[in-house]
Image: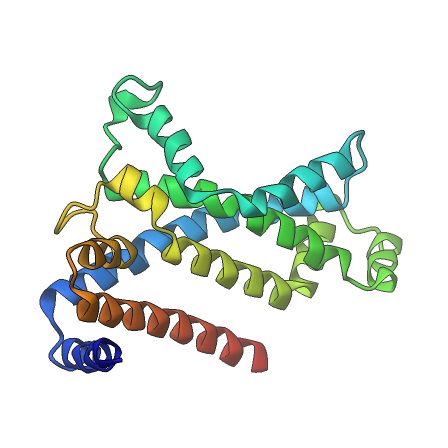
Length: 228
């Protein structure tokens, strides 16, 4: 119990004093996860739209596979990306291993199935009368997709926030790809793992609280946008 109280006290102290290392780790965590979320969104939203409104053989099987990948283990993603960007891998020449860019790639791969699947679910929930109206007005395929995405924008925004939360909270791929290098690839989750292994429980709790605060701020911003 004392460790928990000390953790809260340490968290408040680190935030109020704007501890340089904590601020650096927090900013790096946000930048890496936000970059991965934006890249994944640019891929997932068009892909999910095309899957939803296209008819092809094996469509339901593809959707089932995408939904199965929601539970993709982070260490498995880390292993997959590691094999691709390691020195012996096909993209080893790009020297992405143990870099923030490599971590962005890993997080993008991790949250991509979630964003595609939730985009499909969001678009399936649109009233069929709206879809019929767009078709009867002679909308082109691009106009149709743009309109339906706009109609489901709040649900899609919620999916994007969920993807961001999944990205910023993962630790397995971050350690495997980033290496937890101080001042270079260390983020909140890997710092928490390191501090816990060193027995610095109070600092771990403090970093965990900061991570939760970041998630809270992102969700509050989404709520504000949705209310408007």
